[in-house]
Length: 94
Image (tube, rainbow, N blue to C red; front, top):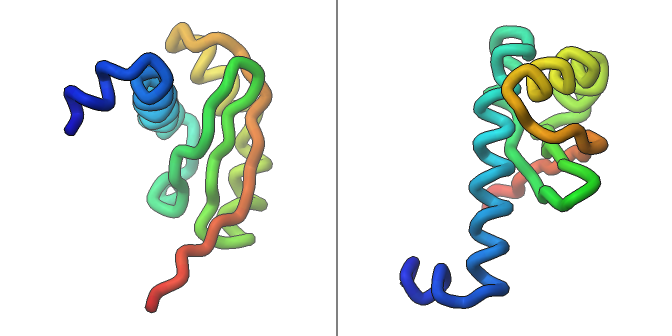
């Protein structure tokens, strides 16, 4: 299935963006307070913005305070600068 997805230009591009978003979050973790990264998920990435999904309002508020440090860390790691958005995304358990 992964080969089929990679073979499609549209789906292959989507997979690359998903991977890049996850790698950005991995690199950004060093700029975050201990424990905060566990409450975040890498969200959508496009050419002008990257969204981080916080699992609670409190995590989102703390993350918003850390955005300048996250941007600086990502620039140090060689990532192009994009607008960082924060959204609360609470997963619902069934």
